[in-house]
Image (cartoon, rainbow, N blue to C red; front, side, top):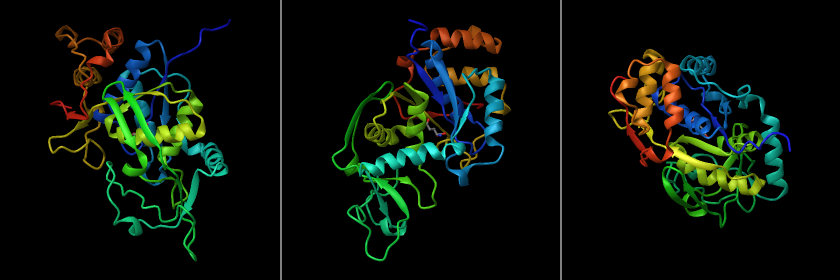
Length: 304
Ligand code: GLU
């Protein structure tokens, strides 16, 4: 008999490219509340697999900010930078089954092919049946032929993607030798037993690729919920590149209330001025994924 099975395992997986801004706070709050309201676990993963984009000290800063907001995570955070062996093992399994192939194409050589939804180029298939003579492998790509992915996003509704038409064979190991985010996230979520992924809607277009890899690796497909991405007045996603302000510059109570309002949770006026612990109690007790707006993006609230 023993312990009851833990059915809900959620996570927040920030990339340490800068300080936590209001957009990442929204993803953290949504994933945290959905996990806690379900009596589930909430894990943290530092997504520093893309080493060149990692800013020294940013991960520690994000963890400190999350602690200051009163987030309580389960276990110790996982850092992708120490997990190359797990990614290599997954790639080997894909290779042994013939699902991946080496690719010699440079960015320039595929620059003429059509654009995918996320702005990347759809791979034209040049090396799919073998490297052209005299060319060396640069990256590794996974075959997508015939893979049509459908899933019901808990916020954005039914999604459908024909990977061969809309993405093409995609990179799982990059030309610089680093493992691609798409592979790392699938390996990490599977190993941690993540059952529910709640994150920003900018990743909705990555989900088909991740489900494809889950199928090939025999990993369970989590339940997905993509919450609106926060954009600034210029219509840009908040990020270091768009000079998003660190959420640390506003009192955590005010930022949390703004995040709850952004997520459609309608915090009552009486909560203004309430201490953090009371805000969290209210937010967990009243969390409703059904109230999160089913839009891909929404405007940064004033003052954030
Ligand atoms: N590391 C990604 C980001 O910060 C999130 C990846 C995920 O949640 O799957 O945008």
